[in-house]
Every structure is written in C-alpha cells, then in structure tokens.
Amino acid sequence: MEIELRLSGGITVVGIRGSVDGLTADDLMRTLSARVSEGAVRLVADCSALDYTSSAGLRSLLGAVKLARQHGGDLRLAAIQPPVLRVLDLSGFTGILKYYPDVEAAVVSFAEPA
Amino acid sequence: MNSSHRHQRGVAVVIGSGSVKCAAALGLVNVLNRAGIAIDMLVGCSAGCLYATMLASGRTTAEAAEMTKQLWTSTITDQHNRRAWLKAAFPRLFGFDARFGLRDDRLVMERLNAAFGDSRIEAMGTPLFLTATDFANGNQAVFSSGRAVDAIRASIAVPFLFSPWPIDGHLYIDGYMSDPLPVGVAMREGAEVIVAMGFDSPYQEHISNAGRFAFQVSAILSNNLLKSQFAFHGLAHHAEIIPIIPEFKQRIRMFDTEKIPYIIEEGERAAEAQLPYLSRLLDAQAAVAASGTA
View 1 (cartoon, chains in turn cyan, green):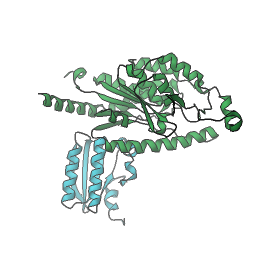
View 2 (cartoon, one colour):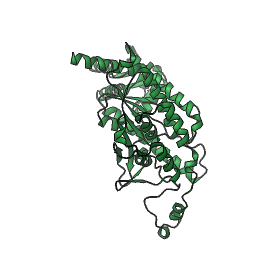
View 3 (cartoon, rainbow over the protein chains, first blue to last red):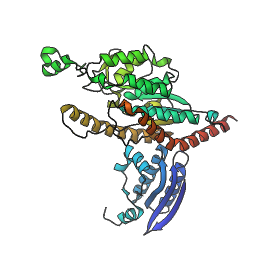
View 4 (cartoon, helix red, strand yellow):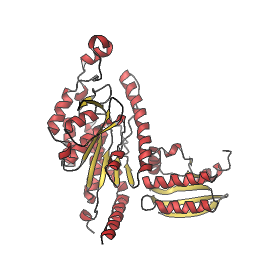
C-alpha cells in the first residue's frame, strides 16, 4: 500500500494505492491519526487506486473516521472502485460513511452545510 | 519457495447460505488447493452445509459438484405436504404445530441419507461446524458432533417450505435465520484467518404469488442480517476476515444445477482476486511464527 498526501481547497486528500489489509492497515491508521493530531481533521480518502480492503482495513478506516469526527471533522471517501464498494456495502459501511464519485465532489462536500 | 509447504497455518473456510450458489465454494477450494493453502476448519450454513460436509469428509471438488446434481434438484420441493395445507386452513381441526412445512421432505431426506449415511460431524477429516437456528428462541445453533444428515436437514429447513427439524428435543430451522454467513463460529473456534464466501439472497423479479412474496420478505431480512452480522464480526475480530463474494452475471435460481460449472468458475474468479493478499498474509504469519520459535 502506498499513501500520498496533498491539500485541495484546505482539505487533506489521502491517496491510497493498493491494498488496505492486515499487513498495511496500521500504517494507514498511523498516517491518518498523525494528520488529525496536526489539526487536519477534514480528510478525503482518494480510493481510485485502492483495489482491496479486508476486515483489518475496514477497522482502520472506521477508526480514522471516528477520530476525525471526534475532532470536529470527517473522513470522506471518493472514487471507490466496485470491488471495494461491495465490501464496504456488505459491511454496512456505506450507511455510516459519506462517499462521493470523485475527489472533487468529496472536497466540495465539506463546503456544504452539514 | 514451494507453495505446497509454504504456509505453516491454514485458513477457516466459511460457506454461507445461498442454495446452489454455494457451489462457488468449490471454486474457492480449487484455488486454495492450487496455492497449497490448507483448510483448518469448515463452517457451513444452510446449503453451505452440504458443501462444507462434502469437503470435510474428504470428497474432491469434482465429486462434490457431481453429488450436487444428484442431491439438489427441483423435485425435492415438488411434493406438497397436503396435511400441512389442511393444518394451515383448519388449524384446530388438523392440529397445527411447530413442525409445519408446505413441502414433503421425504425425498430430500432420502437423498441426504444416500449421500452422507450415518456420517458423523465429529468424525470428519477436517473439523466441521454446521449452523442452524433454534426455532424456540432464534439463537444460532452450532453442530460440531452428531449425524451430519440431521444437522444439514436442520440447516436447510427453509421456513414454510420444509418443516423445522428435531435434534435432541429441540426444533431447528434454516441457519440463515440467525446468521447467513456465520464467521462468528470460526472466530469462536480460534481461527486467525477466515475466508468467508457469502451470497446475497436474490430479490424476486415479479411478485406474482404468495410464495414469491414470502421469498421477497425473506430475502430482504436475510440480506440485511448478512450485512449487520458481517459488519459486527469484521470489527470484532482481531485478525482477518477475507470476504469472497462471487459476482454472478447470470441469474441463478434455487435449483439451477446445470449452471454449476459457471458457478464454480465465478467462485474461482472471486477467490483468485483475493489470493495474492491471502498468500502474503499467511506468509507473514508463518514468518512471525518461525521467528518466535527460532
């Protein structure tokens, strides 16, 4: 898994490439937690190159969402590919996470009234 | 490194409910076999019990596919249970009771007995756990011993269709009513890596009779239960649950056994997609175990 961070309109965009799983989930959680601790509480996960997530990956995503929300922000997902979306849907995550067709829509969503 | 002895530890395979679609598990097992990944335990629910039992008893995937064609045909639901219809219409007169099922189950029992005889769950080559649902309280029941035929019959007791099945003084109905993909059983039994093959219940294209209406209601409940249970177990488990959800482009009906080759193929395809990660995970676990014993 590779993680790439960038800023877009004041929102931290976290590009995730590869697989979030039992071998990589801790890295993702550490990266996201560090950003939230630094005050970057509004995050978008760019999932366009994320090709797999296991239960460990789901746990790290949920942990990051909870952390961001506890600090007044949110982690929103963008461009989720169909295989990953199926796992998120099966796990009920699509009911508790906000997700958007692309990064731009996810970034803009933070400007909209809650 | 030779894949046949690469992995120190195996995986638990959980086969969820899904009628003939459960044959996709044979595709999953083909993929695991080719990769040299051992199966440490099998858990089955509803029709998944058939495949879990066939595999645990040492049958090859080809044998299991062939057995399905003998076992699982639409003729098993052809015979109406006339007394049940009378009981439904005149409950007091005909003595309605909990053993209600609109179809005669003699043929399905005949076939299960022919296939598995008196095989016992505890005597299988691979540890086997079959789930059903306690009809008295809705609790999940897990059978790890006893006659396999009884546990399978209990687990495929689709409400209204087949009557609840008695085991040791309790009545049991279809396993999907408590958990359509019982990964929790594998967790409880100590599995670290769980490969879970589950299936959505299909929704009806047309609701043209009471039976289809009932199946639609059942599918809605079952699919929502699948999601909620899977979400809970995914978050509760400390290790890994690897969901393998075959994507069927063709509609698969309950008794479409002629589609078994296609179903197995889709099972293989879905499993192949997860194999690279599964192999890396098992290799990493083996390395940790080796460093601990070095």
